[in-house]
Length: 335
Image (cartoon, rainbow, N blue to C red; front, side, top):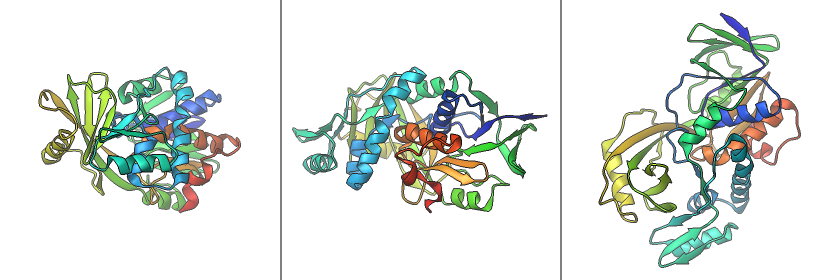
């Protein structure tokens, strides 16, 4: 069976889905192809947290401003898809709280230190599970549950042959495939760019029946609020793709979090594992790859933070709108 679509997005992580929403808002017809099940976005803590992320990574002020500008796109986008953004801030609970607080201020974030804890109101979050449900249910979004086995170029159109046997053709294909290997049939340049993405395995512990008032981070772990508990995370294992829970890693994260959050009453918990993708410079790949191909890829561990910025940047490239403030920094052809 074959069918024709306007735009195909391959991958239903937060980058693919937010890009689909932005395109639909501009009247485009979009089909998202994804095999279903959990992915790195759905198992994440949903942190929209540029402040501590930038301070702990010791980035430049320019990059910190970029991350903050990306965060500021969230309130309007969240309202449009019908989810809430929580803006209760976050804490750093480590022995170097004074130094972290100073770095936050130097990067342009609000911060203060009290009783050995650095606090910033500039970190937000969204509940990832409900947000993923809202994105997939956005009016006008079509889903094809399968995996793309091969892409074939026919003049100005692309054909995507799915493992289900269906063939979908479109003028525009957006790659939002995370850290997966290049799909057979990509142009050499697109395959080269996708091949630069480095996988990062992340493991989190979802702990039920506990509460925390805001995100807390400390050496080796963080604790983030969730609707029905807290999320303890997260490991960053480069070049590791397996999804099997690692009990040793889980114990290490729980022990690290226990230094700044009371886990003595820990009860039922569930291990969540996802594999993210990172570009060589840690920023996403978002924009044109040439010949009707576009990228919405490789946000490292900031997929939720950067999603609306990536979506607007890719949408501008697809529709011919003026470039966004993120276009140059996210350009996939910068490598």
